[in-house]
Amino acid sequence: MYRKIADEIRSKISTGEYRVGHALPTEAQLREEFSVSRVTVRQALKLLIENEELESVQGSGTYVKENKVNYDIYRQTSFAEKWAHLEGVTHSDVLAFEIQSASLTMAEHLEINQGERIFYVKRVRYLDETPITVEETWMPTAMFPDLTYQVMQGSKYEYIEKQKGMVIDRSEQEIIPILPPDEIAQLLDMDPLNLL
Image (cartoon, rainbow, N blue to C red; front, side):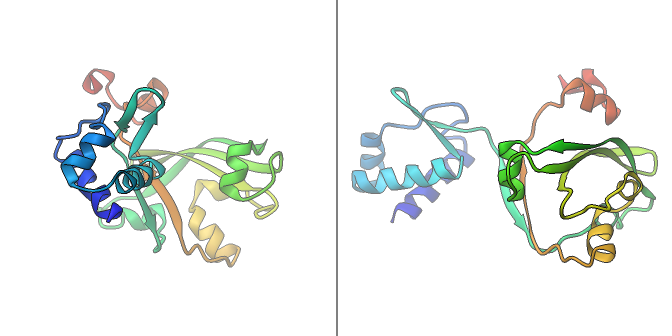
């Protein structure tokens, strides 16, 4: 039942009845609105908070968080494959190729120990001469000891799957629409006036 209530709340968020950045009705109001118990309402809210769709502010209430989309991709494709339907040549400009110590957050993402050595790579991906995306990559040096600047000028997926013989079976991605910082806007040849 609580999942159904969570879906109802999602629906009201998507239609704008519950607005981003605004507080939801109180638990008592939600119980009355959906004709369910307090436990069911709390379970529904807990689920949405864990999914980062809502945010609980102690002493203030529960708020709708900024829109974002979470999804899993089970069929991995390279940058070139993703843009193959368009005529043009894809290439990369490597802006940074460094070895760093993994922060706690990055170590958790990569399932390694904090402080282990990792590659940090920043590059701009192009279709012909048009910049499409700015990409940052972190890869454990223990897993990819022969990774080079030259490799990252090409296809990361080809290196991992064809040269290393590994299979990328899944990735988790999160997309959040934001206004780009000035540095990113410049790298993507975006006019700051058009972002206002």
